[in-house]
Length: 404
Image 1: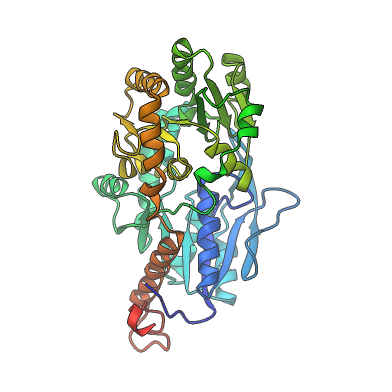
Image 2: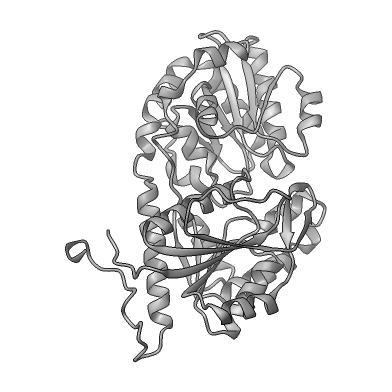
């Protein structure tokens, strides 16, 4: 679907994270901003300053507003935005955005919702991260209900809350979230592809062409359940002594994991073509996280032609059919996950079947479709928020392909 969008339509995006930071939210927002710019939007990005040399890499059209921030515990590479309702009110009074989108729900996001409400601006939000589930991994599980009430209150003050899966839609609706809408995420199939497989890279890992390489790509942190990957690999090694484990990413658990599994390859953070080569050069992809709202690494692994084993959660639950393009395990069944990992690593025939089918199973996840869906949501929200007789009434509504 194509949209006629008035040139110069302004969207203010409020977020704690954005490229070049490496995480799922940053990657998704980077792609979203690219799509909005291509569709004629002017993007104002409001975020905490993350470093002295804080620069954007999104191209022309982005107006950057840096806010004060403080380090996030266990996420020292990111900063939490501090409240700035008054500053935002002044900023948006001088030049009103057509709509505000709050991507992360910290104090900065709350300030943006309050400022938008005071100025009677339309505002949407995204539910990117299960903070109420993350809290259980950092010794503050007693605050789970309090955190969920805060998140629910924040999102219910917006005109729409966008979530990446149907399961998440249902879950939030059951928890009294209102106006929840689906906005899936895309995968760059031109980047992530089996064609990026590198024999030289495998050789650097000490893997022959016949040996199984088990891959994990994510932040090395407790909420990603990476310890279960180590346990599964140790079981795999009992059956396949030549198997290799490659962990792509970094985080607070890296030193502990290196001590627990010194034979593993710790590749650190990888980006772009380098990341694509790391994906495609593996064989079996393990992903036991239970905290994802989506899990971008799952479609990336499928697009790269890996045999994916995951808990039936988030994106994996919607994209994988066991035995056809991957293997799903009941969420939280650790012993079952470990046994399935060992069985998959030992079964070359099943690996080949899954790896051949995997890339085709995610070809429908076009970023263009995601960008169009997001633009449509913004346009509809703006139109619904306008008063009758407004000079802009109807000017931002999406149009049908035949009239575009």
